[in-house]
Length: 392
View 1 (tube, one colour):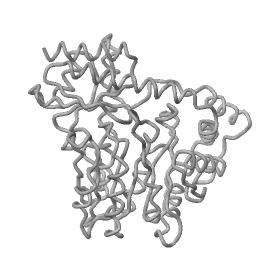
View 2 (cartoon, rainbow, N blue to C red):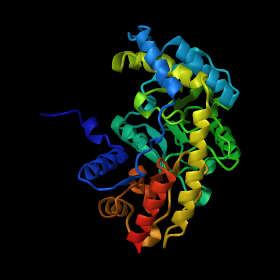
View 3 (spheres, rainbow, N blue to C red):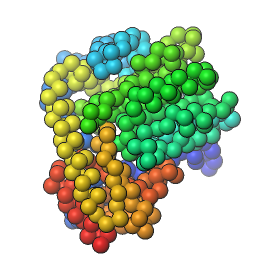
View 4 (spheres, rainbow, N blue to C red):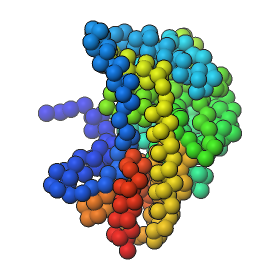
């Protein structure tokens, strides 16, 4: 049996493989501290759950428009105005079944043999996987520890060629926790003025998760690129709704932007029809309801990132920069003598600690591992103690 060659180019997100192996070890009686998966360990706030239940009881369980309920899109408009100061139209908002469909749609729109797409490395592995799937050339933009894990505008712009179709940026960033300063983002946008053929996908899923006085700068605040900008966001991280599969994206609309919005709407019609209806009502409640649970979760992530950073830096041959965003730490383990994936594998099998090797996020991830802060402080202390015992 012969399959289409493009499917042989699809990669994976190895955090899910680590999750599966950790679950198998736990089923066998092992005590595993799972710091591998990028999933908040908090429950979805109760008023959001109740909104979904009410929607079902009220009969909201049929199809919706492919781009999402107008009420849900209007909620995203309100939230975007609150967080960025920018007013967008509901006709620019697509409700998506998670964040990955926006990546898939944007990358497949611009990727084909002969095209080039720039992506952060280390970065979310699906960027590279989908670029390879389309047959485009994946061009990594190094995300360097010495730069605070922020992207460099100068280095990014230097990678652009006449074949470049799309640039992917991510701040606050997975897996590094880096936050790119506003001044650097401004330099990037200014430089993109010399490259009007390049579209931009800005992954802003961790937008509210910044610390130590850092502030997220949305690319929506730069009107000069709005006609070629796609912004990815969603409910999964901010409201602990990973399993609800609820995301949104903001697309340019109209002929001046190659009708990108209508293209993604047609893709939705052909692929997933529409997003789960009661989940959309839950999404409205998340945006418009009380944010106390969000604040509690962010305060916990703030404490945990400082705790795990301090504990890791006390280990032999480990160096860990304090992350400025998201809920990950990305320690440098190159001095331990281990390759990153080998260390991650042995820590899981021998020490009972699940984490992810840096190369699973790109070639420039060698020498690093990613730990999620989605565990209690007691469990984090247990994990780092086990890592220390293993390294000694």
